[in-house]
Length: 385
Image (cartoon, rainbow, N blue to C red; front, side):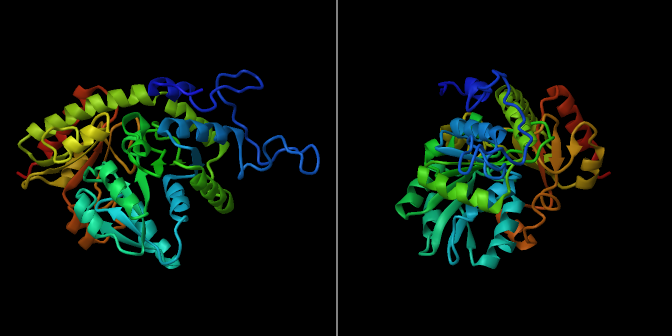
């Protein structure tokens, strides 16, 4: 059964009840293998790398939420991207958004390059500039919108239309938005990937990756890669992820409410030089994001003005935790140039605008007054006397 409203689908979508027992939560099928009743006589499962009922429930759920043909669960977001990029062949090239997660860049720059799969950084914010980057060897485009860490917005539909005219595969990383806020397949994407570690899990207690494909043909290819390479999500982690997704709607409503307040506070603060948040009407990506997403999401990046010591800022935070990752119920902060994007060469970081002064915030669901008070205290403490 499918549901018209995503808030309901988050809870009841996919395989939400155990048919054998009636359990309202799909059990953790913590098994590596399954009894066969005879040669070639299986009960639907044979080996948990190939298929597991708990993982299957999660995969059915994310496929329904994203509006795709099939879903696939992996041991991390990068494992999901690795499987998806394995659809390409030696000599192929992929275009990537001008600022993407550092792990994605490292994967292409230092792993897939060994197999003769190349990449070009493209300004996907500008569809015309993007089209000029399409050469005969380009076979796919990988988009982040909002992009990590500058929150730049790509018009997914416009880029997908151009890409499809040239026969390209359109891959969208929807980690920052989730299907609750943005549904890339409806906008023209062929494949959607997630670091489900983030908002889908939502509690900083599971590492996972998901991919959703639009067609049966892509599903058959990715299923073969998933089974052959084996980077699958274990049953217990699949269970945790299903549990996290059930509360995604209520969590994100609070996350976004807090993020808007934090972005407005930072924008009005004289100590802040720039704020990157597509939920602000002053943001250059606001209008495009408004067309394709429910709101501006949760992630914010900003820079302090000269006369502020960024290290002192980080040291002075008490509620907001300095840590890698994002999307948990707790507020997190990071320094992209030395943390999430350190694997990107400095000259490329500077070219795309990832400065040494850039700060990235993942706003949690704490009381907003406590979040703002922590930011205020840290900003004042960072003033160079």
